[in-house]
Length: 139
Image (tube, one colour):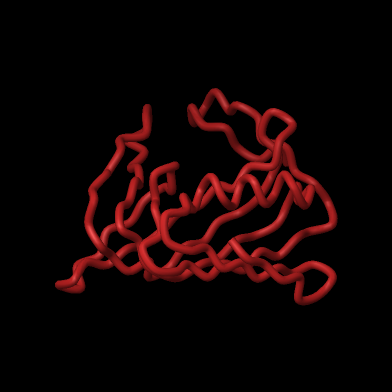
């Protein structure tokens, strides 16, 4: 991964072949001590691992296949005291068919993924919400 801080609150990252999007972004957030913000990305993957939340659990959607990362967006907050990127993505196959879901570890870059991270000034913590069965912002 290469990165450049383009202003006081914004970073550009370039992930290269073989890097895991979730793991690389999480590592970067920890290293730069970014505890809240937003993340966006586009690029290409050689394998993907997304998930669909059925109301009780995340069901993985996983495949080794070259796809375009049409859009990735998410937010950054603290989960158990550590920076956590909560991201969703839409990917497209060679036919143009799209699939989307929650980004899990296992989204491996094929050529390049370009990421923009915007840091916010105030941190937000995630806590378990019993009514939704999810770990949500404590706001």
